[in-house]
Length: 100
Image 1: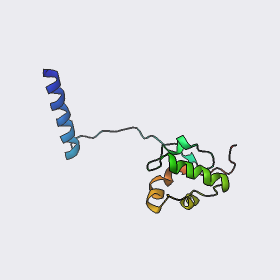
Image 2: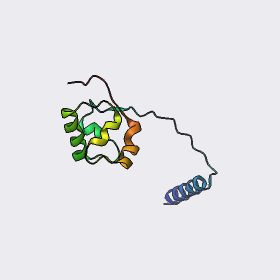
Image 3: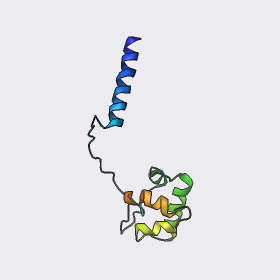
Image 4: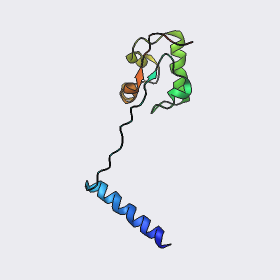
């Protein structure tokens, strides 16, 4: 029981130090691989913040009708507004040759 109290106190101290800027934690930079709009599957698209299965399917359906030429073209899909686009656009790319 003592170790749980010590653990809680330790975590509380770490959180306070982080909030006050007294503790710096360096995390390795992880470059997220960009998703290609012309090849990404519904499950892959749902890994993007704000993209659920229905919106991911709309993106794929749009792609079947119109090959994406630019990432900006994603805004043509119903449900992709400026705010959501700004959130996810850095994680997207457009490959010139779609895989079939």
